Amino acid sequence: MDVKSVGVIGAGQMGNGIAHVMALAEYDVLLNDISQDALDGAISTIETNLVRQASRGKISDEAVKAALGRITTTLNLPDLGQTDLVIEAATERETVKQAIFEDLLPHLQPHTILTSNTSSISITRLASRTDRPERFMGFHFMNPVPVMQLVELIRGIATDEATFNACKAVVDRLGKTSASAEDFPAFIVNRILMPMINEAVYTLYEGVGSVQSIDQSMKLGANHPMGPLELADFIGLDTCLAIMNVLHDGLADTKYRPCPLLTKYVEAGWLGRKTERGFYDYRGEVPVPTR
Image (cartoon, rainbow, N blue to C red; front, side, top):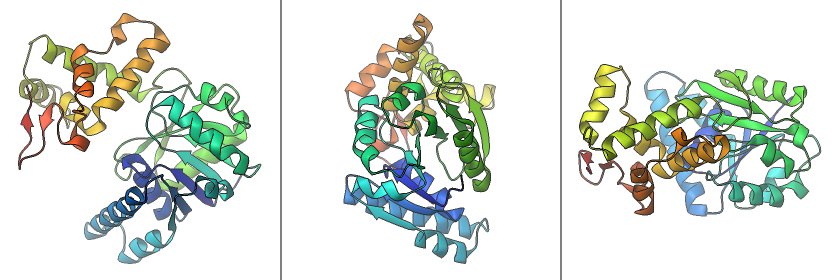
């Protein structure tokens, strides 16, 4: 199937990044959210990021204008039914995703491919609640989308080969690299990454090291570009906790038990950069560790 138009559900960090790269690859993009402020903010962010790319010589000024011209926004979810490929990028909560799909299904064209940018939830289970499990799969971009090269493609048990090939062709056109992952909790990247972050939180919780010493040790001792606690703040502590819960529930192994300190931060509403407090406090000129 030749994908020409893409619908993106959710105008947050992931959604606006997906819309950005899709428009730059000359797809017509329809971006949806329940908030007009979120849509306006997404367009502003996309424009800022495109201009930054142009200033660094990665794209032309003409490409910036053309990409922005390919993105339209809507508060009306059924409008996305006319697109060839829909990518759901809403919050990492299964009930929210299922509700979105149920509302959207009656308006989809028969050929439309339905995908989720979920970083951990079962694709097979999400697909089973739709009328097109054969044309449903996981389309997991990494954050920040315009920068990161990898896209995980996850087949549910019913996903057909034509759907997988169509999504792989989209990734190729974006100039990114696809990795095929089986439908197990958290797939590949987060199956490895999140337990590392969770262990870093345990290291803090048990007093083995401070926020600063843990991050500095991993940056200088393991050559990581960001420390694990800094990275957790960037991802969002609520997202980290949600993925650890999926791993713990789905694999029934105590090694995936979320650290109580991670749970406490989320309960406090200290979710990282997006709330200006997490393992670091971002309200000043320089981030300061909160422990």
